[in-house]
Length: 217
Ligand code: BG6
Ligand code: MG
Image 1 (cartoon, rainbow, N blue to C red):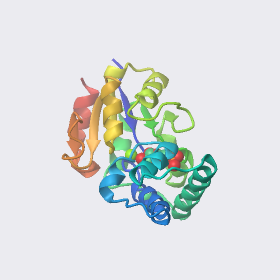
Image 2 (image 1 turned 90 degrees about the vertical axis):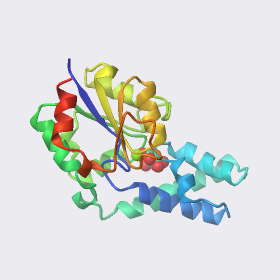
Image 3 (image 1 turned 45 degrees about the horizontal axis):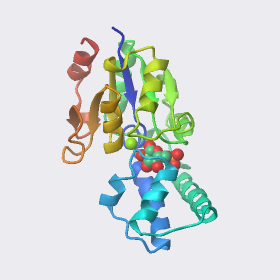
Image 4 (image 1 turned 180 degrees about the horizontal axis):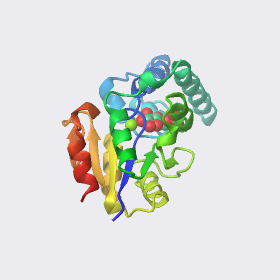
């Protein structure tokens, strides 16, 4: 039974969650909407369009489509400005060894991200070649917690959902994996990601025995 290892991108492989937060915070500030780190958890794993709607709902702001489109462009330009100098140093601690281990063991690896900026980030950080399949915000119609992104990834890797393991830092992503009948592995705080089957603070807390066990199930 062929396994699949599916990685979320932002906040799992690279430390870009903080840049998304900074860029949204600017928009929220301009609109006089209070937007805290706690609010930000609601945005993790969620599409760009839905993220803006959540912020506007928080501030009870109603906006025209024209305004929304402008803010979406502004947010992405601002976000991309943080990525200009991005390189392999942006890969979160412990991630690279796990990717390498999986490759050595010939395990199928996919990306399952809501981001439309996923490919350039994998290129800049030099890890594009580790992925047998890439499913991102350009490929899906339903945002996490809908499992679509992970189901497509498992299918591309020719693996049944029940044999797929999903690494996620967002509540929506953990829920998506669970709803898709996959094994969710939360990366972050247990208080936030308590719905995950396994939780690790970060990838340095994951040892190769754990991965080996998953491979041999
Ligand atoms: C997810 C992030 O990976 O991608 C969200 O967790 C982000 O914060 C979403 O909004 C969409 O990303 P992008 O790069 O298409 O704006
Ligand atoms: Mg994420």
